[in-house]
Length: 488
Image 1 (cartoon, helix red, strand yellow):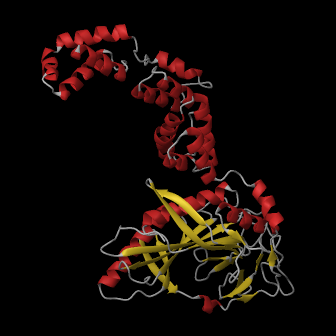
Image 2 (spheres, rainbow, N blue to C red; image 1 turned 30 degrees about the vertical axis):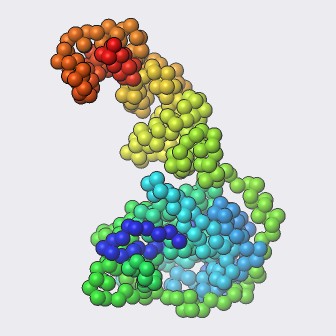
Image 3 (cartoon, rainbow, N blue to C red; image 1 turned 180 degrees about the vertical axis):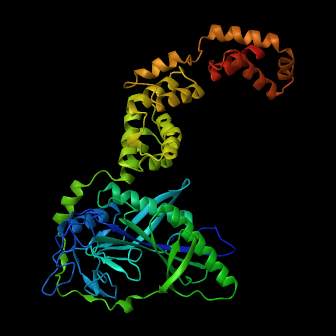
């Protein structure tokens, strides 16, 4: 269990997550109806989804393979046998009157998700991940005085991924959700589209005084963006603390977050497992997963983010934080490796990708696959920093030109831009000695102050040399030559 000294008004925050990841299968979990998004209402619901008499569910093999992949990615136990259950509750958009899910024996058991909050590594334990079907959707806005029902989503395959209550702050909760999102998209089991409902998070939030038993939790449903997730959890924490400070008890409930007001509001009192009257589904046999099936999926798995990050630490000598950041997506990892191999400067490559490249990508809301500066161009630029052709300031000017499309080609255009803009750093010791001599002669007061032990005077002289060279002098060389001249 993770602990934290970050108390809010004397209260410890406790957060657990339930995440529904829509699986990237072409058909539904128990029928052959399509799962494609955006079709006309009720055009992708077959007899099984409508629960017509005489229909029987048949397990989708691809959905099971998605569950196996998640278990492998998170170090979980993949149950050789798991059971499907009926979860009974009334929803107008659930024609059967029950949802097929898993209860006592889920397919994926245990496991963990590790991530960074700043430079601190955190680990959240998982309870389980189970297969289940989604319900349909009620439409309230489009019909005056009535509600419509769209059953296209009914039967869509989901993995519900449940954590232990291991998170102790909103920052940890959002970082966990981002890491899980990265993993399910990385291994290809979910497209991660939060706007379309492919990745939906429910946050169980409670507060307590340190050392006390767990407080009563309230579940915030269907958080479909990381921004709203942060706002909703922050609000809920403040609300619960205010209630307790005012002497009120927290009632267990399911709540919704309203982005327009920034507030959560109770939707219904929270049901417990007994309210759903779970029992094994008589229409579905136990799900058996052989060790051979698991090994077959293991062979097909891509290199996982955590394994790739560990390799980056060993192969490129990167800090763990850098390696974790650079493995946010397969595209970013591939971009880094291409740059690092081409320029032979992995730490410089990491700094530029995590810094200037990411800043501009975020500002323009584009992915690294659409970066205007290709890996070969960035590698050529970094090589010119490493061989002292460019200062860091001049390199940013060249990068800006590349980003604006002024450079063409696979990297040779970097040299052309350096020449065209006159940005080549002066490394000629003779030329620098001449500039330094002129600066010393013109600034006797600063020279006297330096000899009196005032470092500010030395910095002022360095500034004068850089100014005289129009910013092209190599700063390290200027420092060394100037100090040698003054102390000689």
